[in-house]
Length: 322
Image 1: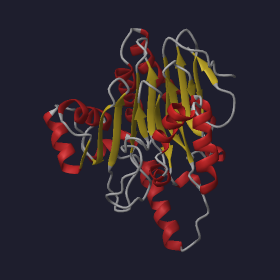
Image 2: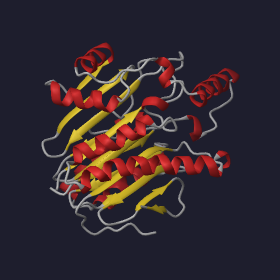
Image 3: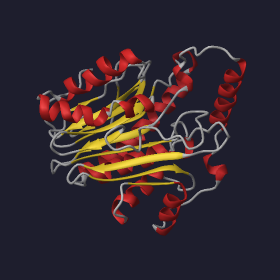
């Protein structure tokens, strides 16, 4: 199915991680569950936009839905560090003013994206980490959870498998299944404003204290009404080094490229050859969307005004629903 690239009254695009899908392990039941999780997030964001709400509120609602679904690596489904702990990162950005908020190394808030939004709305800062971010979340009255809420057997088993693989001394086999996962959303509302939000548990067996691209403004998250909104997912170190989200916006602003041209140039042509596995979702100021990725697949979905919901995992046709 071809995605409509004409200007849209409003548009929403989401992702649930890239490069983490082994098709041989994806049973029909599990595939349906992923599509259902994506659809729930699309509906949450679309309802906001259809009612005339802001892009900022739409991406917040969509990411909350993804954080609440344990199939995705954020919030309740966050992966474990090498020490068996969980550390979550998130960021949000408003394209109207470039106001932004981010948190890193966080554990406790049910929805880390709300902690990131609290940084944006309640402080003069852009990023808070660890205990400081946790204290702000408590002051903001955010719902908190203990370790059992965030524990999933699949994530724990993935940690044990990764630790065993490392202990074996076997060379890196390039298996993207073990590497990364993130959730995110971008939107353009009826007023012409764009916003982006991203949330992640990071990489399975990552070093304690490691922070990827998700909370780094201009790398994994960016929004500016003059160009676009972007939420990325992938090998965060590469996305940080290449300042991926801002690079796409800069190509649009200074190079005159369209959103799709700029995104493909960075994700496919620039990151692909150097092993920067991943992808992103993006929307421009006219509501046109693009969802490029350079790996095995990317959980993704699109909601546009007066159009059916579209969800996909690999490079197959989009699944259509209402």
